[in-house]
Image (cartoon, rainbow, N blue to C red; front, top):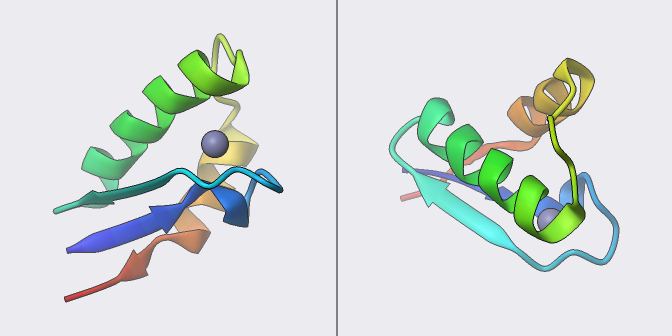
Length: 58
Ligand SMILES: [Zn+2]
């Protein structure tokens, strides 16, 4: 299981996501970025930052 805290990239955001793979998390993050951060499209630079911050959890 992997986990990502949006606050690692977007200060003050408390959203967190869990998934079986990076792709599963990135899909949730893309939806969240659109709905809650008003991002029509998540830039590659942000995706790379998200990937770097994804943690392995039990
Ligand atoms: Zn967020």
